[in-house]
Length: 636
Ligand SMILES: [Zn+2]
Image (cartoon, rainbow, N blue to C red; front, side, top):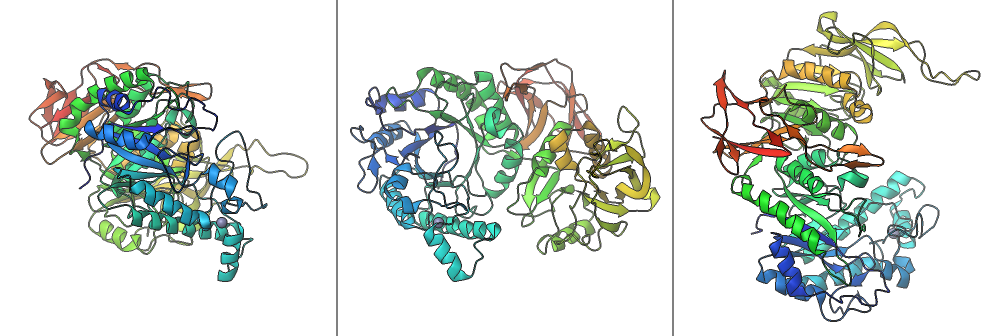
């Protein structure tokens, strides 16, 4: 039985050769005490780093040159005394020591190179598991498993096509066209799945196991949980975590938000992004009903930076007061956003951001998951109705379900026709080849009554005019070069008989890729159009919060006995290349939020302070107190 994962720290520890005083101040008992004082219950701790150095006396691998003793062994012993679980980290994708001693174990790119890109970084050469490296890795993993850690975290499992001698021989033998990059990538994916299964077989089933970098839904049967790695202020951005967590929590019982303390990215020894910024990420985790861990990098000579753990301790000291209620609570949603397994396109962060701003509660699910618990299904932009989805969707619609689709969403694979029986009110006229076009809504939804740009075309369609919510407005020209002019200026010409958005009964479709466009342009008019359609399909949503700013987040989690309303007011500001949270945002008292359902008490947690509310037409209307950063309310 794997216990609940909570209050984690991911301790990065990649050490270049040349740290002459490695481990100078490191003391395992002090290390464990620092973590324990910081209320940490779970760490990912290095057995072997991406340089390929092991941090225990290894017979298989390469020990760190100036290491004395057994670092991870002593950490396991001391942390277990403090009830801290220690998951052993091994880098699977990077191993620069093995690459140096066995060049034939490296991946080879299409140009025949082993080394590519920035050689002062860490990803300039990666390993091929189809070589002797695969067997070497298995020996390393077996040796690490014998240390009896609480689990294994396998890092940097990044998919890249490989043309090494072994892969090329194998592909030629199987008749794979080695000049077809997609086919080579598919072969490399099989190699990665194979090594994943071989490693999984070594790790006992009662231990934690995670393959970082693999697609969430291709190894979900192997992993014990999910860690959404996302340093939002740096490379990942603040739109990455929510859609990924929303999907991950449907694949695993436990999901962790792995954020970090860094200002820039991993390896940023001198970067600390502020306490409020780490809290912001943990509030996002609470809003999404998932657990959290903070990424750090330990100094090779000095050990843990005490002040970082003082701050983590303060944060975890506060958030642990909610655990009495959050431990068993799960996210509650009205809307199922269905994606096809193995896809992650920009329509997913686009939909997640838009629905979050509108305070609609949603899960991202795939075609293999049940639809019937949702009041509305969204098929965003690229989701095709394949053989697995079609019978489910048909049954869902026959039982009165509601459906919104956009762009190519709702089409059969191959995109030649809509899913039969659902879209009979739409004439499908094929993919839209325009690169400039507009739409005009029947009702005025935005501040200006004008033609709005679609930005991301999808399909052409026609409907009975009475069912049209928005008409298609063509441009005078497509953007193009005619030999004399570059047609950059492409104004709207007029309505051309096509429909941009239509609603009939329980089904609505928007012809363009509304969520992709929202992700790329953040156009408020796209959001207004979506909201207009959703209001008609979902007139009594779980949460209604029109007085709340679009920058705030309001979500609901809960158990059979109670609900938790999460209200988050802090949000990042772009500052140069970074999105920064320096301090929390205060929302004045008096804003109203309503939650569907009858409740007899509403309290502010964790102090259980009663909050003003009234019950009206099956909804609980709560008057919020002043909120700085985040608040959690108990509804019973
Ligand atoms: Zn290879």
